[in-house]
Amino acid sequence: MAVKILTDSTSYIDESLKRELDIKTVSLNILFDGENFKEMEIDNESFYKMMEEKGIPTSSQPSVNDLYKMMKEVVEKGDDLIGIFISSEMSGTYSSAVMVREMILEEYPEARIEIIDSRSNCMQLGFAVVTAARAAKEGKGIAEIKEVAEENIKRSRFLFIPHNLDYLKKGGRIGGASALIGNILKIIPILTVENGKTTILSKVRTKKNAVITMVDKLIEDMKNYGLKELVVHHINCYDEALELVNLIKEKISIDINISSIGPVIGTHVGPRAIGIVYYTERNIR
Image 1: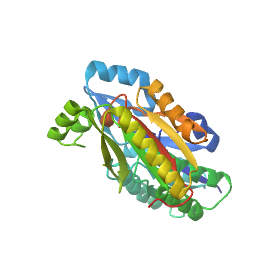
Image 2 (image 1 turned 90 degrees about the vertical axis):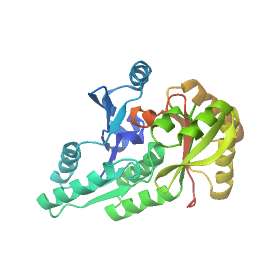
Image 3 (image 1 turned 135 degrees about the vertical axis):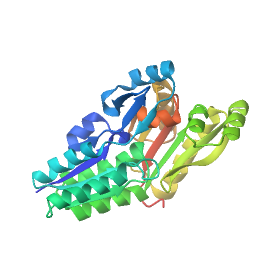
């Protein structure tokens, strides 16, 4: 009996790593003018080109049927399952997964299924998934793997910088007046995720200064808590992500992967956003 790990598409874990660690993924959806796409079935370049042409789409959680099929596939084989999903404050995915778990347990009473609310998205969710999957590969049991994932959540941080505030305004993340003033004055918020919600860490004049401030926060956390792994995120701006990688490497020696953020989160934050996700040796929160 093995323990399998299931997550959703907003984790944006590298495909080769998902294959290596046998991470299962259920897709959220994007809706353009009545046409529905699974996030995992449209490449980022095509999506952002479509968004330029058609405007900002809407997003939705995975279907109950998709969640049910993936969970059932695992328990039918006699394996245990841990599902780790996007923050319940941001999507109904977690709530649906909890409901589907109960449906599965009615059919398979002996099944062991744990559902975890990551309280975030992107690779802050992804690192919880990856560390859990590594623990599963090592042969750890479901209770210990769950603890590994929950401990990672306490030790991770997601910092990101939108290129402008229009997408956040449309998504209700920031008030209309604040968005207007911010764009006129070139005031850029450095955003983070705490208690499951997007919040403002600080506000800085110009994107360049915001990037420097974000890296300074990384260095501060590294000094206070140690540093394990780090990913640089971008939304359709690889060159800016590479510049950020080089800036970080001027200050610390660490392997850094670059990860493109896909349609669902990209819809709410907008193109040319950049950010960093990392987790530390000791608890941040």
